[in-house]
Length: 152
Length: 152
DNA sequence: TATTGTTATACTCTATAACTATA
DNA sequence: TATAGTTATAGAGTATAACAATA
Image 1 (spheres, chains in turn brown, green, blue, yellow):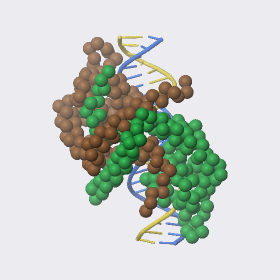
Image 2 (cartoon, protein in one colour):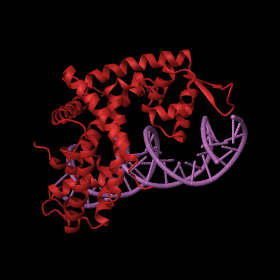
Image 3 (cartoon, each protein chain N blue to C red):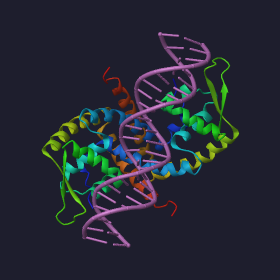
Image 4 (cartoon, chains in turn yellow, blue, orange, green):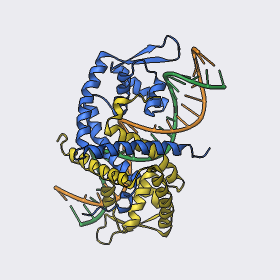
C-alpha cells in the first residue's frame, strides 16, 4: 500500500523526527535491560569519559537543562553508578565520577547499544553512513544557529 | 572547545536524537505561530491530503496510537480546521476532512515549514540531501523490523 | 551580580488497559 | 469476536520561574 503521508515525507524535519521516534523505541529496550534510560545512559557515558565533570558542564555538553538533570543524577547516584564529590574549589558544585559499578554498567550497556546501532544502519555503505553523520551534524548546527533569530 | 561527548557522537542513534531534538525546537516555533503543534500539523496535513480519512487510518499512517489521536483531533476540530462526518457505512467511524479554514491554515503553515526545512538543510548538496533522506528511510525500516524481535 | 544546584510546575509526546458502541 | 473511537492513567523528555548557598 502506498504511504498516505506523501506531503510530510518530503520534509526533512518530518523524516528526521519519524525515524528518530521509531529508533528510540528500540534503544529504550536496550537501555531498560541495563536499568538505564536514554538520558541516564548519555549522562553516564559522559561522566565515565570525563571524571570530575560538574552538572552544569554535563548539561551544556548534552543540551539538557539544569533542572532536568537533577533527577537523572539522582537516578544514577541512587543506583550507585556515580559519585558526587564536593568540589574543593567551589562549595556550590559537585564533581561527578563513575563508580566501579558505574563503569562496568556502562561498558555492558554500551556494547549492546553499539550492536543495536550497527543494526539500524544495516544496508548503508560506509560512504552513506559518513554522509548521514555529517549531514546530521550540519542540520544540528543550522538549527542551533536559527535559534538566535528568535524573538528577543 | 572540543566536544566532551566523544563516545556518544559516534553513535548514529545519539546523533539522530540530538539533531532531531534541536530541530524540533525550531519547528515548534513555526507551528505555534499558526496555532498548531507538531502532531496537529502532521494530522492536518494528512487530512488535507486524504479527505474522508478515518482516525484509525490516520493513526496508522503517522504512527500515532489511537488514544493519543483523540486530543489532536479535538484540537483541530475545536479550531474549526477539520470536520468529523459520520460514516454512512460504519456508525462507529468518522470521516475526517479539512474545512476551508483548515486548508487555508495548512497552506500558510506549510509554506513556513518548507522555508524552515530548507534552512535546516542549508549547505547540503542535492546528492547529500538525497543520501540523507534515503538513509533515514532505511533506518526507520530497520528499526521497525527489529520490533518483531522483541520479547513475546 | 552571576553561577550552582535545586524545587516547583507545566506541556508535549508516547504507551497501555479497559470501556462503549457498533460491526 | 473484532474494530472504531474513547477514557483514564502513567512515564519520559523538555521548558521556564524562582529560590538558597556560594562565588
